[in-house]
Length: 123
Image (cartoon, rainbow, N blue to C red; front, side, top):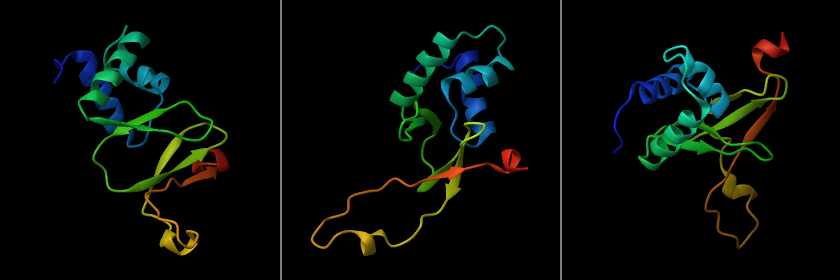
């Protein structure tokens, strides 16, 4: 476990307050509200440490740089807004994926991402 610094607290707070996955740049902007002058390198170092500690998870979307969210949440999926580029959590799962798994195949996991416009961008 790494030392708890004001920078790390600001990054944790940013992730908790957002309630959805954030990019390093979004984390940097949000953390600056609590710790002015926090550098992007500090954000990346803390992302690495928080991931190694198991506190945050990497959210990978096809063709996109990784985003990060608080670990330990129930199984969920994501919605990616094509206009503002934000990623939102979608609770639940589409259902019985074994029904669409080819016969004889063994399903071990899945990724499901919705794309479109968020409520703000659609307005």
